[in-house]
Image (cartoon, rainbow, N blue to C red; front, side, top):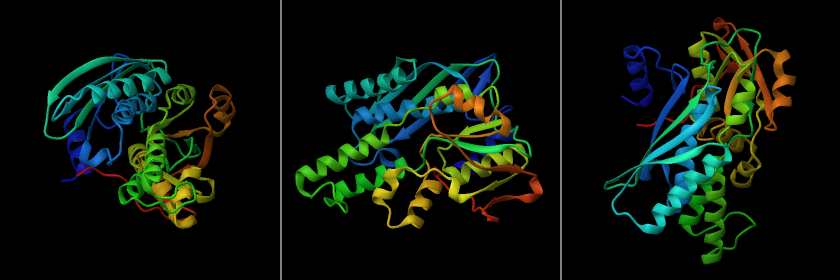
Length: 311
């Protein structure tokens, strides 16, 4: 079975499973595992790997509307290279500092593939689940979508030793620029502050790590509702248009590639001014919650459930 089937199996077995993080007496706990082969393209620095691995878990804390408390990581690799290990810890520490929390250590182990397991901890007395969206709510997304898709294209171009744009001209200098650009795009800001701003108002929330289209389906399924999305309202990151072959491909990458770690939330429309006043992160209204019989649509047509899946 793939990851989604496995998650459904475990949701039936474990009471309370199904949200971005577990909540026990106000303590928010989440864990993630990332692998060299599937999550870190050739050219990903250990600094970026530390940032991204810990950031992914912090994003789950954000999706619950919680304040981040701390993060740890288990680091496994074939060898312990001094510079790589320090770079990883510095990346993990810097992403924590960005959201006013701490990276407090972890574990080391030998493994034939670079692998990281991260855990983030947060606190909230009023967590936001995926399951509370109500017909009439608006559906919003923070930030912009598609940065990770653009990053992967830049990693691929660096591996091929070519650039299809105007910012690099091939050779060692061009490859260096491509890798710098790719790593920069891979370093995202976990939306802890935006999650805290949304928490008093949101009826349902999750992060977009599986892609916008799949996240909308997951939120609709958890809330037993329909969702109507308007394509012209979806915020596409400028970096996607740097690499995409036309607007159709840019839209596809922004909505189905995933790994963007923005927040997708449902909330009453009259709460929008208060949320926007409480955070400096952009918040785009992309649609509305409907009844379950209306299904999940985009511009009136069925929205296909496609996105990122492990396995």
